[in-house]
Length: 53
Image (cartoon, rainbow, N blue to C red; front, top):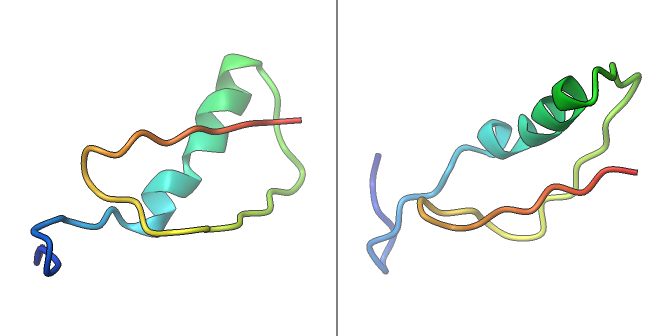
């Protein structure tokens, strides 16, 4: 992994996309579809919030 100009390491997008599967597993729920919108990069150490409805 190569840090960016600020020394940060970006997290691979599919890692953040696995968050809804954790939420669904906790609720014993299987999703029929999921839609993702990546608003900005996520870096190691960032806090990520996952909301479901």
